Length: 357
Image 1: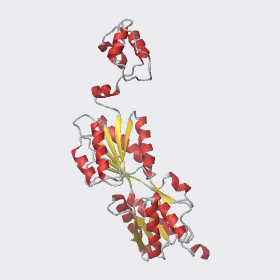
Image 2: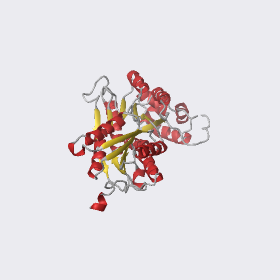
Image 3: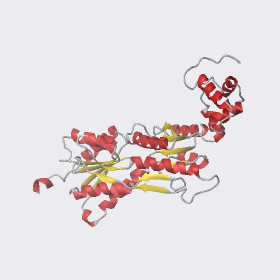
Image 4: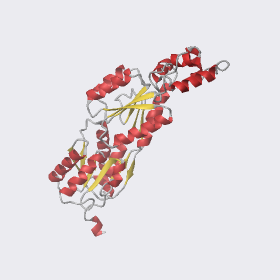
């Protein structure tokens, strides 16, 4: 018998099952059965196998095991933009749930680049992940092409396909827009502004529809809405809010596409010499952790980010557990989770109302 190699770092890649078999004096089949738990071995063979594996610091190949079992216990996750604080919070929720279920997550940041997103989706397919979660603000044509040809179980988080052909979970954006606008109307605001991203973004469209729902009731017949478009970042939100205030100086409140844009609006309002909420009230959307630390703290529509991530993982793993060739009646559907308004210091009565009260 040859002298065993010196023990190295855990999981040495140069140690094979054949090395364990040689040191233990058994066949590779016996080693495989003992280490997989499928057999206790005969006589003292199990003890010899375990001792040899310990001496050589052998770790079974996860790749070989995955090929044999046809599962990697790994999920692919594509997000739109890691710089938006909403997405790291969503990633945490997804990863926590996946870990609880015994799965690892392979993360890709699309950086709002359709080609980069497509390259990642092709990569995870080649890496034999068990399934994919796509968490974006809206599906691109590139996503649609990939979804049409992939055979990987896939779940959408924070977006949906127009025909509902892929399981999806997202927040009730329309209800969120309505809640935000109703809150401002209740405070007496009739000259509303809105800083939002392009209405090519489905979430932006739904939130806009919700705002218009609130403004369509008879009690709001004198309300007006001025709209300014921006990108989904602080700087663009500040620039758009500054333009809105310049072109519509009578605006007393601003609804924002998300909390990041709202942070920009807060900056623009202060730069114009106005105060929040004494002169202009601001409402965000998402309720990211930073919202409560803004100055003043941000009134916002809260999405249940943990529930979004957990539902996405559970739905995907439910697909993996289904019998091959079967289609559950609920396989293709969209779930909209409820949202809630979180009132903080960035909203108040329309200027003058508090003085007359």
